[in-house]
Each structure stands twice: as structure tokens, then as C-alpha cells.
Amino acid sequence: MTLKNNISLKPFNTFGVDVNASKFVSIDSLQNLKDILNTNPLDLLILGGGSNMLLTKDVEALVLQINLKGISVISSFKNSVHVEVAAGENWHELVCWCLNKDFGGLENLSLIPGNVGTAPIQNIGAYGVELKDSFVSCKAIHIHTQELRTFTKEECNFGYRNSIFKQELKGQYIITSVVFELSKYDHSLKTNYGAIEAELQNSAIETPTIQDVSKTVISIRNSKLPDPKIIGNSGSFFKNPVISYSKFEVLQNQFPQIQHYKISENAVKIPAGWLIDTAGFKGKTFGDFGVHAKQALVLVNYGGASGKDILNLSQQIQKAIKFIFDIDLETEVNIL
Image 1 (tube, rainbow, N blue to C red):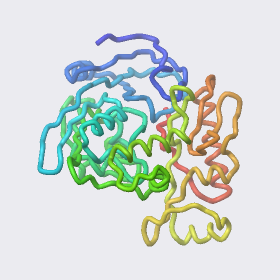
Image 2 (cartoon, helix red, strand yellow):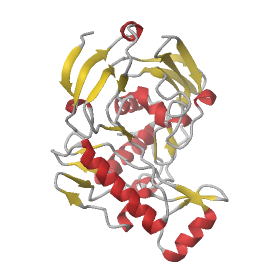
Image 3 (cartoon, helix red, strand yellow):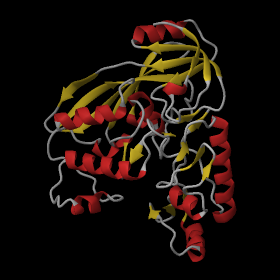
């Protein structure tokens, strides 16, 4: 464990924003984490895969890169296993590990950027599946007391891109490992969301495996989402807003083609990408940054943009969506 001073965070955030950290340390053991926390640093920035953040200024806080590694089966049952995964493991590499073992449950979450430790914070999800669907528990260390605590699924209070770690306990804990329950046989496939079913039919796959579902999700994501290694981005920048059914009916009269998903008798989810596209932002560029041409939900850095540039663009989009649709768009990305 080596403390580094005045280091660029450009390699450590998927937006590729070049800001400096005054102090930086990579943590590869639980003891190292306890030792650094025991020095009572006044200000911390916890860094996982750097995939769900927008850095808008230099960081004066001590940056902790959580690099804890390890994946292991800790319990095996008739038709399922419990797998414990250290926080520093790459999310997609975990999905690939599960597929190689023929463990089902995470295949729809293929190719989501980031690390395992930050995944529960926002309850990552895609194509009809959320992290909470396979989540059993997580271990987390209290920043000030260094107490290691286990959180059950119920205690995490998961919601849409939300958890207790974004609400009541924000900034108080660092997740060190996560336990998932995954199926061994008779996998329950979720193929009726988005383009998965159509893509499987186009490939003439009638009885798909979890590997088929993963390949399909990867194909869909690659067809419309930019690779952050090539074009800086953080995936979905905004949450899909949920509005009342009565408000939806008013909007449907104004916009008959409005895309929507009814989630209850009284609530409708509107794809944020459709709103942004309809507002005219899809594919627009503003110098070194803009809105991706294939997916309006993704803001991109083409190489030289600052975090403030992208933040200003996001605020322009929010104002336009509010003006046109009277809908408040919430950011999914953490803005720092």
C-alpha cells in the first residue's frame, strides 16, 4: 500500500475526465483498508471501477481505490449456490466467471461497467433484471469505527437504482464483499424485456441457455452503447422517470408515440432516452462532448471535455425535458 500524491484520475474514471487527486492509495486487503481508515482521514473519495461518476473538479480528498480481489463458492444447495465476491472484482468478469461455471442469475447484467463493490449502492440493473434479484448480503466497513457489518437484502432497502447506501447511510460505509445466490440448474431466464426475445428469434435460438442470453445482451449493448475504452462515458446518465398514470394520459394525448412501461395501476415508467431523443438532443455534439448518436441516455466525452462541460450539458437536457414534458430527470451518475 503506497500513498501517491498529485495523481491524475483520468485512467480511473470511464468518462476519461482529467482531474488531479492530491492523495491516492490503492487498497488490496481488508487490513490495509482498516489501517488507512484508522488514521481518521477527514475527507474520502471511494473509487471502484470509476464507472458511475462524473468528476467536475480536482479532488482534495484522499482517494481510496478499492482493489480487493477474490471469488468463491461459500455454500452449495440442491439447485443454487452462494458466491462471495470481493468488492474490487470487475462486474462483467464476475458475470463471465458465473457463465463458465453455469451459474445463472446475472446473465442479463452482462457488460455493465464498474466493480462489484459499487453495484449494490445503486442496485444496478438492465433488461428486466436488477442486482437485488440475486443479492443475499454484503459486508461493509464503517468508515469511522472500522466495524465490519453484514447487511441483508432487507436492510439494504433496494429501490430503482437506489439503496440505503445512497440514502440514510451515504458516505458511512465501504462495501468490501457481496454474496449472490445463483442457480445451478433449471435457470429462470428473463428474455421478454427489450430486444432480447427478438434477437434470440433472429438467431433461431428457441431454447436459449444463460450463455445465449448473455451473448445476446452483449450484442445489443455493443450495437448501441459506446465502449468507454474508446469514447468516454458512464453508461446511462439519467434514470428512467416514473410518473403517475394520470400524468401519462395527458402526455399521451400530446405525444401519441410516447414510449412507456406500466409498472402498476397508478405508475408508468418513461424511457429517459426517448424523452431526450424527442427533445432533439440525440447525436448532438458540442465540441469535445455530446449525446451519443445511438443511445440518447448516454453522454459522451470525445477526448478533451471537462467534467463541467458534461455537467452543463446534462443540466441543459434536464431543463429542456422539464419545459417540454414537465418531467424531472434525475441523474443516475454521481456528480462530484
